[in-house]
Length: 238
Ligand SMILES: [Fe+2]
Ligand SMILES: [Fe+2]
Image 1 (cartoon, protein in one colour):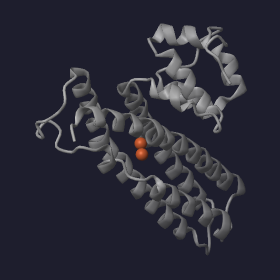
Image 2 (image 1 turned 60 degrees about the vertical axis):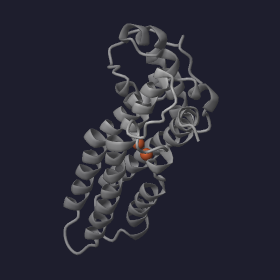
Image 3 (image 1 turned 30 degrees about the horizontal axis):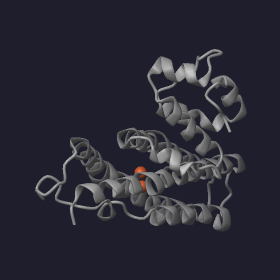
Image 4 (image 1 turned 180 degrees about the vertical axis):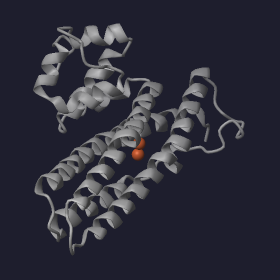
């Protein structure tokens, strides 16, 4: 586990996969020998939240649920939104580029159109999921949090017409299964005179993306949703 007193540079030398997480918090390279805590302080980042996110990403078996439940919802939602943005601006275009490069590397008869078909199915499922959360789930969570801070039970249904996060937050299994299908089409059924290295690059990106998505969904399902359910119990008199 990493701690806030460690140099951030040492942490990155140890696990460079954490770099995108740093970016989501607005941390860019060039932090010299500063500790993780000092870097957070200079950028006005909640250091405790930062280190817990870093550790859960670094070690899939580490998930301090109770600890996370202490952090305010807007902080959690902001992190989730930034993660979506990273998927839109980096992972999705990157996967698409790598897929196109792989296809271009394999002339002649092949079944690469299958890959495109499975990729598009996955992309559509993912887009729908992310957009729905950005448009409906997150605004609901933030609204609810604001009303919670005002501290009174909600009896006027116009204030918040939908009364449960359960109606918003769909299961992540559809996205996961479409990604698995896409990976399997490549790993098990690829028939083409393709470039090995280009194919390995794409598969590595897909596995990294899968890890990122798993971590993201876990924060939504195990932290955001239970926190919202707690607040709903307080705010909506049954
Ligand atoms: Fe999400
Ligand atoms: Fe989600």
